[in-house]
Length: 145
Image (cartoon, rainbow, N blue to C red):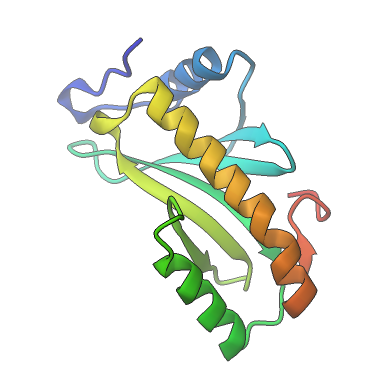
């Protein structure tokens, strides 16, 4: 099975069909994203970039509304530096902590994308309790995310 990105054109519907076949189940869509629930994490999969070189971003909210201070920022930067992580943490404009990974669409395979989705979900699940325990906020799963 191959994801056709010939000419750089990649459509969300095609990606949804491809993910459904890869994961063996229906994939939900919300606005311009696809959602894959894995364990206690919901991953968002979106297409970024122009039509000439699309990228696929896999992301999950880890914690909503923690207390953002220097210690949390240092913790996230140190975690990003870890060679064990497949992606990086960030904080959005709502002060929510995300974990994400971005890859060129032409480089992905079904197994590679499956591994990225599982890795992002696992990382979000591993770090949510740590962050909530030290900086408060709500795990995305508890907040309906």
